[in-house]
Length: 424
Image (tube, rainbow, N blue to C red; front, side, top):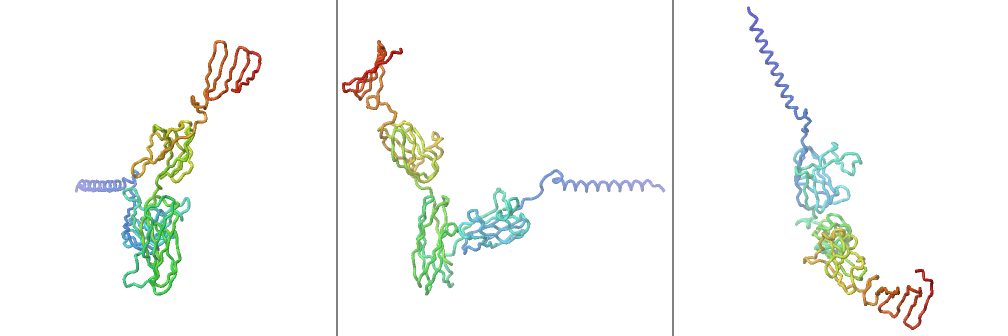
């Protein structure tokens, strides 16, 4: 009986096994190809968040929805400061997430809710302030646009107790403040507070800017009494722009907005002489003052000035102005070294902010013919005599280079003569 068929069968089976090994190996290599060639196959964590306007008491806020691919936290900030952090949230979708107050900041005003990863892996939020200088901390999820995954909302105190509810809180009947306030100025607020109870009570009334308590008054009111409260708030350090404010009692409040703006530009000439111009000015932006002559040409500028009020700004004009000439001081924004490419600051009507004055006085070293200040003429004669004449005075000095004698006449008829050797 021949064994050839059996041998052929064995060879075919061996070939099939080799092929299977090759295919499996190839599949393994293909599956590992990104790693073999150094590609990063780790997907970036993804998140989303929804945070809507709401009312609250300042101790908590509710985030409508947050999705975290790797789990983490919701962190709420006010003007960059952390004021609330949620509990640890596992991966997936979460609705109506409560964020509790953290530290002294209150969850009121315009707030930003940001989805954070649990970078440290301990399911406890670790912010930059808790982490050491060289330690890592929990960081925001980053969206496709390269920015942290976040949403903003305004949390305000409720307008008052719901119908049918019983409350002993004072009621804020009104709150009024100046709509527009210059930078570093003061904000004046008036508010009417009512005690709705049938008994006398004492309660705190807070004034807040962007959720931060800036002043607190303890108010005592008789039964059903209404009283006007006045607040004067120093705005030093409050950045220009729109800000929210509110008057709050225990369970009531009233909110509104005001605008912090740079003070209107203004300039007044204090003194103008041929050597210098002195001016008072209010700059709405960082800039400088420039002095223009009667032809509209800039002849000098002040040093750089920060925005705000400035008194007795002295500008050295270097004898570029003459007595009786018009000098104009103009407000500029920017760098005084770039006055040639800078345009003047304009008011609301598009006109340059400037002030004009007439120059008074003569320059210290001005020589004006016929003006009585000084006129020196030198005249050489054929015999070597030289005469200096001064107009506007009676004195004439004559010097005779031939005999070395000097004569001076003071106009009174008296002459003095000094004899000397002729070195010539």
